[in-house]
Amino acid sequence: MNTIKQFCILGFLSLSGLLSACVSSTGPTSMGTVPPTDLVSIQQRLQDNSAKVQRLQDSLVMLEVRLLDQQRLVEELRQQVTGGEIKSGTQASSGAEDSKKSSTEIYRAAFGNYASGHYQKSIQGFSNFLIRFPSNDYAANARFWLAESYFAQGDYNQAAVEFERIYNDFPLGDKTAEALLKLAAAQHQLNQPENVQRTIELLKEKYPKSAAARKAEQAYQ
Image (tube, rainbow, N blue to C red; front, top):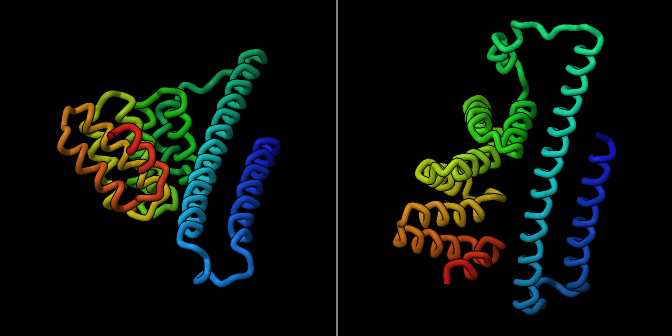
């Protein structure tokens, strides 16, 4: 676990160094004297690096979830080898145990199910997270992965609903631009070309410098 965190911390520090380089490259002159093209370049780099930090955070969560799953498997095997038994009432009491879990535990479990392809379980987990912790810092992320889980199952109608909610509820979120791009993808699957066009125009208007807008330029020309 410490090795994983050290790796992600090193990655974050590297990104922080790049951010510092972007800022320092402007020199001692005031922001008012920096050419507009340089300001646009700096803003774009900052947005890209913010997205990279978010991806590192998601990767850390995924790695921690997998490590916890391996630890649980080892413990179960150890109990079997030593003649121990897993209590039959464990599954029956799982609902009560879930109510005692922290927001981090619920999010990690849901994300782990998504990463493992157990989309119905991830839908249940992220829905539970959003009901219990609607104002949590990871609420926007939870909504995004909930939408992705529906999309992965082929439920494009519900995926579109959830992706649109991200834009409405979290307009300044790190994943909002990406959510609009995925909303367009869901609408494309639903054969709604007019909605796709409106969504792409909204993406370009609201988040013109985002990576999602650049992807949209390539995918929807």
